[in-house]
Length: 130
Image (cartoon, rainbow, N blue to C red):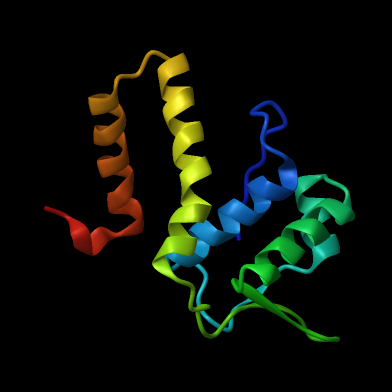
């Protein structure tokens, strides 16, 4: 499992870890039932405090992405949690706002941003190619 963190992008490290694990699961690079690295091992690899990784794993567990098996490790969840469309959009709205604000600050117009999203979508949803 490859995770890259950046201390300069303003996003807390535990969120970077959690988001990248979510991305790996969504992209199919981590499968249901697959074990993810132990907290201490990932902390050593990333050179971060184990509490940071533990917090990321807790967030992933709360989101239903992973499950803990006492004494056996942490695994990608077998079943995806069922949440309403409204709740999904509630989760995504602040992220969309942040992306739009950052694009504006970088002087990237909306059409360029949409083209970038379309390009990136192909990595997550390869079956959705036009």
